[in-house]
Image 1 (cartoon, rainbow, N blue to C red):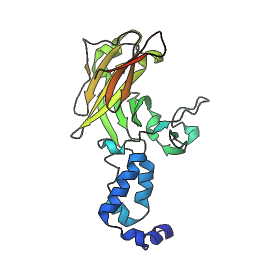
Image 2: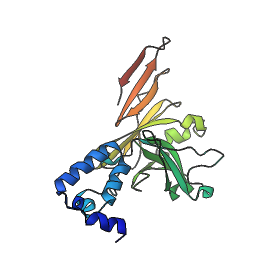
Image 3: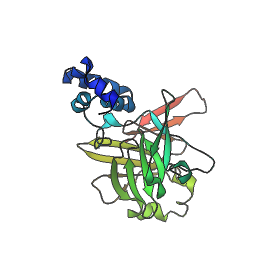
Image 4: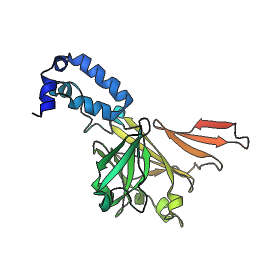
Length: 237
């Protein structure tokens, strides 16, 4: 056992009641996932009394890394570039801390969006969509976008600016539901982790002069009038 771990295990703190340890753990988790991970690493008793985020990182929203965003490297270095040792940096919006995470998936995936700190990826070879938790490595598989011809057959769908999207993620009884709004193509699609193809909402179009906003599993429309002081927000999904 490492000296630090051994010292912690032999201290009075290591013998805290399990219900108190769990309470402290949940309080830390409400602030930041990495604080919770460090807390669990302090000693074996604390680790055994608290839930591991691995395997639950996506299906349990409490473990979503909401205050972390992927850091843009610049200089033509995409996330996971070999010159970065396949590492990607993430920036904490509260503390300003940067952490490096090795994500080999970026060899053949691109990032479509970030939702609650989770990364929505598209695999290059078949447009398969995957939802990745960057800190636990948990992955949820979603259908390929090519499973529906509407998106892929659009004459300008391959233009990067037209692939801009707003995504939202919701969880219900372990089933992950993802909705995406293609901003410039002005339509929406939805799929769950149990589906084999995306369902495109054929009778809905993104109104012009409105921008989609994703928050806590919901999609909203934001409309700002000519008077910059007046902004209207309405939930749509």
